[in-house]
Image: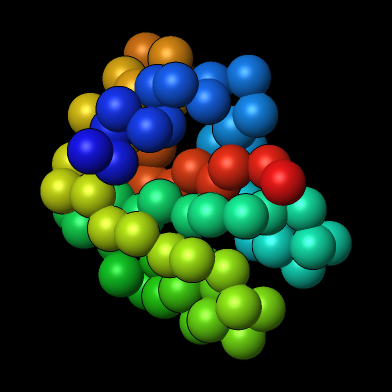
Length: 83
């Protein structure tokens, strides 16, 4: 389900770790998707900040599939939906 949701809201996506962290800090995010196969050291920051800011955080199994759902040719460790 998560990949389908990401694909449906492509125009409102923020893709990548740095951009996702910045958007969460700025209160611009309603939901975050994190790939399970991404480096935990990187994704942990997103999870903690999302929890702190009360943003829904969902896990998906593959960076490659998350990237494809976002419409990019490379894997994505994280993506966020703009409010």
